[in-house]
Image (cartoon, rainbow, N blue to C red; front, side, top):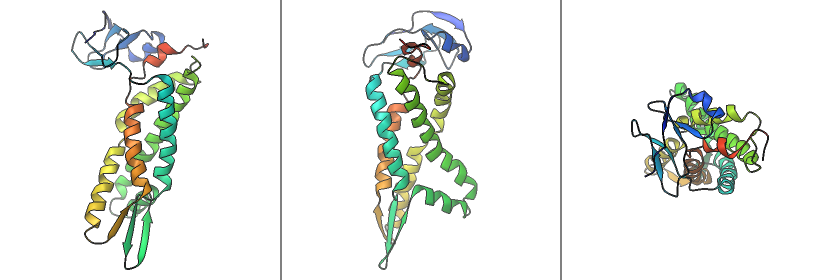
Length: 218
């Protein structure tokens, strides 16, 4: 597996926007020259052995297309019911927003807001920010607020917990199915698809966009 060429010593992460051909190890803060990787190759830190970055499996157009697809599926996941409960001829549909609103009026009120943030707001911000920077990147330009968007994207990554919400929805369906008739709604399927898409688009190495773009454009 290829390794970065040489260490340049510790450098604050905020200075990386000035040196797009460098990469900082998040574990030991050593700086290395960024080298072009072939498909499936991985660059490791020569000091601590941590993964610095991986070869991209998607080009810019594919990345943008998946981001726009994620935006549409996000709307489906939030607008359509997650589950439908049927009992004695009556049925009730519940969306993500309704489930969090119900949590706010129950004993679980303290976790309603952070749950809504990690499941709805943060994924929405990831999609919007990615779409913003990628649209400009196709023209070789840096979007307005590019540095702040890149920093926010990097900080949001650990806080997106769609998979936890999806697991909770599936557990609820299994438990309720023994008592009432439960139908998995469009929202749940959309949530599953969105979980996969966000893994593909939001967990990629975004630092190479500094090198791919320029402030004045190509």
